[in-house]
Image (tube, rainbow over all chains, first blue to last red; front, side, top):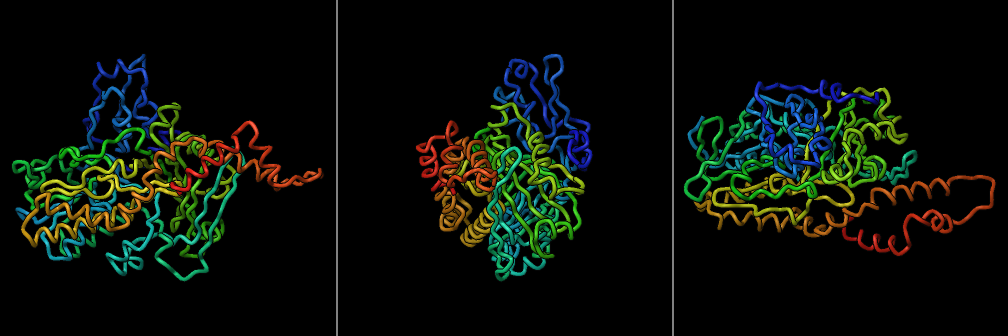
Length: 92
Length: 429
């Protein structure tokens, strides 16, 4: 039962995915960052590095807040998803 | 819905439900607003609910609440890469006592609690995100949610660690990667009889095991394993700064933890059914913000009321107790017809008379002492290696435990450092 991928983990959860993202990156601020802690702290691996840029997808977000607290240059505009959207835990 | 309320409580976790329940029982017009589809849908905990606080509020709660298992085994396990050394306290032979604590699953627990609020006469609305505070000059006068303005005599922000309302009011604890821990957890379904055999517990008994060492790769954090009725809660809690500094992911620790010999056989044949993550305020007393303003009180995680010691993280009972103190304060304020910060300051007074602020005071140096990386690397490793030597019979002449300990310490930690750490730990355990 070990060796689950992140996709497999997140597929266990119930989400209502919004069409618009509740978290936004400020690209110019983000590009200047060398640390890129978002790549490590996001427990759902929503942040990915592609060709030197960070991209973010909100679909698997667990709404924990780790990304904005860890973002040194404060490039993340963070909020909870709109009403009815996002994760719904069945166990919690 | 009514046009105005005596009190609006934001967040239907244990802090918010305890506040709203107490107020509704006292006959106040109270509204409880929750952003999850149902109460508990956005909640996550380890988790064990410790102590008699819930029973003080709802005397029969231990019979009617969806509590999973009474914790009759408390264990602490130090992990090296391949071995473990544990202390295991079994209290099953003692009379049923609320001091033991119960394992809980928050999606179930919070929903039950919110139903209790409704039964007590409170108005509960779910699936509504509160976007802002409603202001009357410098005074908080209600909330703004989904474009609606809902006036209230007082607002209780119980909206969790990332409290939006505390921020709007300028009262939020400053969350930094140093004073916040990240918890990730898997719910692993397992038949009750497997749980009872593997953990040596009765049909309603349960185990709470805390791990230190290999489970977080030797960095600031720990692991946990709790038994629910027909599932296990397995997870790790790691300081955010430790993840950043070491470029590590919590989920990678989870994989190693699940494969560790101390855990592997316990979760064998189980099915993972949920993966969750949440933050825990762990900065202790220094992190607790001002707890009130004109027309506003903060409760639970929104006020960083979590006790982080070398033993465990305790938040649920602190949330409940702070919610009850908030309700008591609001009742008195309403009698006076005065929700000014002067009257609401009684809240801080009540909390400092209860275990909530007393415990945070007693353990105020814990966060600093828990920064000592040796707690997560050198010491668990050393303890396991020593146990390995002590229990090995290899046909050679034996050495005393003391001799073996000195040999193992060589090159790892000096006697002076060990003594200094032991002395420092007096205040954090």
